Length: 230
Ligand SMILES: [Zn+2]
Image (cartoon, rainbow, N blue to C red; front, side, top):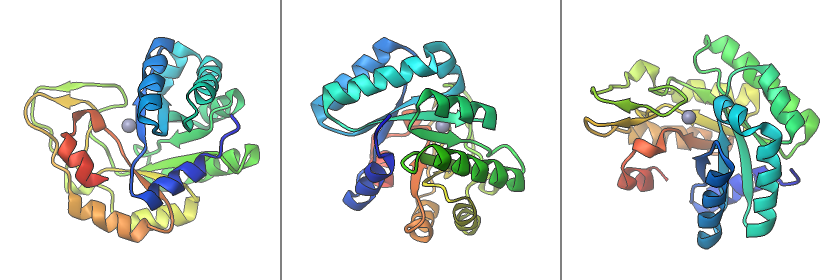
């Protein structure tokens, strides 16, 4: 896709707004997302997990995203959400994705660093414009949506450590960092996730010149907390 995704994130950071990622697994979902974004005149991200892109088709997702970018006139980013291997990264790049999220957060730190660094290199070889997201710390829940019927507490030791985040961002050259600040994937029926805003502020301060921050698990976070996080 011929889009400079990095510019959009830079503009968003300067303008102090966030870009929403909506995960999609079918053409009709993409149509709805594009229509709403077009009405709002807001840039947006189509996200596909490995499962979602497997169902939809990577090339199909690229063609549709390009079409909607043209049709809506708003910036469209197509992100490979929670990619777990370099083989998959290559597949996404070959298909034409303009954003890759490499998720090595379940790997030991050194291995996460290595796979993320390699992903940045692979993306650069294709185009300087491809935005790469790394992930550090453990976000509750899995990549797919879940309903939690028991309270889920994200322990402090699983949350993203600001000093380690800086080291990680500098060593890998990522454009975005998915952070763990109490957020979780899925929706809880027993209370809302408690975000650690102090940690978020610290992460933002320390990473300001390095990368933008990504908040995963937005579906289960109350609107007021999302606004506050932004
Ligand atoms: Zn996620």
